[in-house]
Length: 116
Image (cartoon, rainbow, N blue to C red):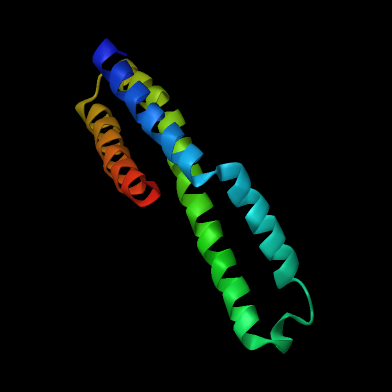
């Protein structure tokens, strides 16, 4: 993989690491665990407004975690995709890898704004 691509991927990694730090991924996991415990309480729905708050917060936190973890997996896969594209020397494979990088860059920019 050429140095420009390595530099681009490193910049994306730095941005994602910043987003992960701002969102406090470990704290988010702990929050999800706490909310899952609350949601499992058979008496949760005795107070419907509290139950709705718990389930809404749980859903939001799980979605946020899934989004960030998905970005991390795709970013971690990006160097391999570029290597495969280089081995196949196919324009389609190179184009797909470049499209994934553009998508990651766009999504990270949006997350960075949300986290910032």
